Image (tube, rainbow, N blue to C red):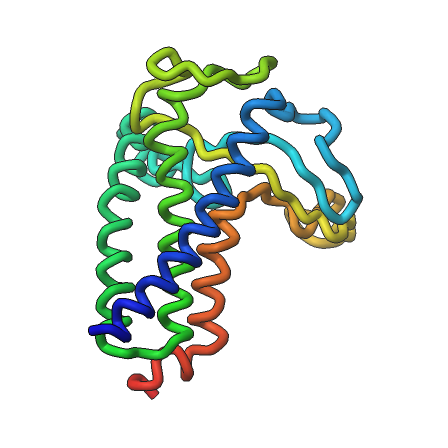
Length: 215
């Protein structure tokens, strides 16, 4: 029980650190800059690394639930997504606690911790940001609880990091995409997304060490 407590305590410390960094970076961007509109200069531009301010109403890559279920409205899809995140967080936490209690691999514990931290980070945006902050379109938002840009559960996730490492134009002879411009890596994301991706990446790359019982 003592070892379980200590391991859980370490996991929660890592989780808290990631969560604080994630929220501080989002709130700083939110309270100091308006949205970066298409064609505008990035807040920071080093070529291969940029800081912008965009808001994501959906999931990864900006996908929305109503993109897959077209007979529901965008707003209903947003509520479904936020509700899913609300239910997912305690399930992931139970998975973390159970893996620690079973003394499973430390890499598994680390992976789940990273995924949980990221899930909570984006959940906070989805649940509270619409209620807490005013609109950022052409304006710098302010804290205005109850007079924000939307209701509870309808907040947008704040993204700001981009790594456009290199770009090219597809050769004209390639069907459909020939002549089009392509940038790698174009998506804009946040620290919570990075945490989730890192946790999943560890599980995939170190699968045999993360899940030794399955090998």
